[in-house]
Structures are given as structure tokens and as C-alpha cells.
Image 1 (spheres, helix red, strand yellow):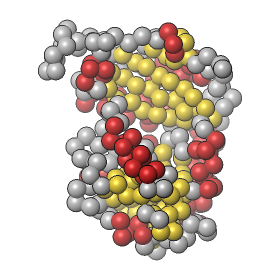
Image 2 (image 1 turned 90 degrees about the horizontal axis):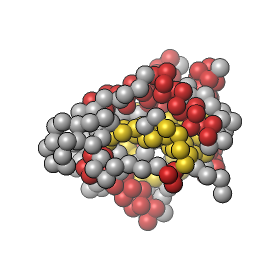
Image 3 (image 1 turned 180 degrees about the vertical axis):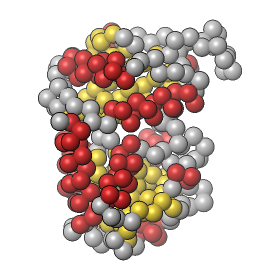
Image 4 (image 1 turned 45 degrees about the vertical axis):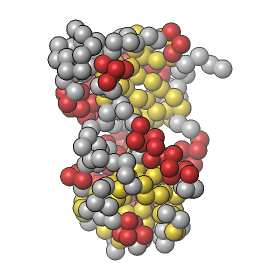
Length: 289
């Protein structure tokens, strides 16, 4: 098995040799944020958007991302090279914690240097296959509080539980329901559906994490002249949709074939989903050139 390398602060080293302090607040209190992006044969077409969001979310935990955009790109390229992924489709996770404080108290305000950790791995074949095969989704109640959902915090227990419960119901992905019964987002993706030729997606005010790919999809749709509505929706809206899909940086645009076991009527044809996939492919190619 090829040895895996990680980026820890300013050093690329074998994963087995990487060490983070037991006093790091990311470990003690989950005081960490992250972003996950896709590399296309070494190209990072959406790095600027991911970097900007990471900086914003870092400030929310009282930390500051320590690298310039240029240095981040260099370090990720070095990490991809170390893992023989410069010619592959890869996922890259960059995480920042607020580091080690002067003491371990919960309300400690004086923090040291942040800890930066980055991982890279090939995009699994099963994820690539979803583009054409689609996914079955199940709505999951009681897990999404909406209080910190708009920040990409490292504590993903609820997201893991959402996926686990979906699998137990025979679905591939779970979609969170709010306390009011509104559909929100999947565990690691944003949700869209099509009705009457218009694109619908839960609004930012519902407490969702507004993904980088979500923003690109909305922009592409509007440039194409497709009406986009950000609103408040329920499971019945999904069940009556002509098409539905999920969006994320690694999976890109993934069609939904069923909701809670009920087939999505337009899954086989899915003209708008296919059109957006083509537009997204073209955007990736342009930005990667």
C-alpha cells in the first residue's frame, strides 16, 4: 500500500508521523473549521472561493488563516505530488483549528498559532459513478439545529448520523429536516429541485451551509436564463418535483432518483440537471486551463 502523506502546518510528512498536540482546541472542543475541494489533475479551479470561505469561518472561531492564497496553492500542489495525485481526480480537505491556548479552559481567549492540516485522496469510483447513476435520498428529522449550520465546523457527528440513518432506510444520502419540517441540505451537499422549468433551493436563512458549488450552480443557471428561487420547502415539494439533484465540490452535480422511496418523475430525462452538469464541466475546464 502506498504511504499516505498529509500537510501539517508547513510540513508535508507521512500521515503516521503527523502529530497534533493533545491540548489543541480543535481536539479538545471541536474548535476547528475546514473546507473540502476537488483537484482536477492538479488544477484547483475553485480554490479562491474555498480559501475566502475558510478565512471567514476561521474568524468565527477567533482564528486567522495564516497563509496567503499563493502559499495555500503551493502547499496543496506539494501535497498532491507527495500522494501521486497530480494526474488524478482528488479531494483535498484543508482544516484549521484555533491551536493551543495558554490553558485548557473552555473560555480561554488567548490562543497561540492555529494548526493547519490538509489531506488528499483520490475521488472514489462510487462517487464518480453517481453523476449518471444518481442517488436515493431520505429525509431525516431531529438532527439539524440550524444554529451553526452556516459554518463548516469540524464536528460532523450529526452529518454522520444523518448518513447512517439514510443507509438504514436503504438510501444513499440523508437530507436534514428542520424543527419546522422544512427540507434543508444533505450531510455533505446542498439540495436543488426543478419544478415547472424553475430551479428551487433552500434559502441561506434556513441555516444551511452555502456551498461553493451551490453558488456556482445558481450563477450558471441564471446566466442560462433559468429562474432560481431560494425559499422554504417541505418534503412534499421534493416529492412533486420534476427533477432533483445534490451539489458539492467533490461530487459536483448528482441527480436524485428517489425521495423516501418514491421515484423522481423526471430522473431518466432530467434535461435541466444534464444541462447544468455540462455548464459546470465547461466552467471547470475554463478555470483549469
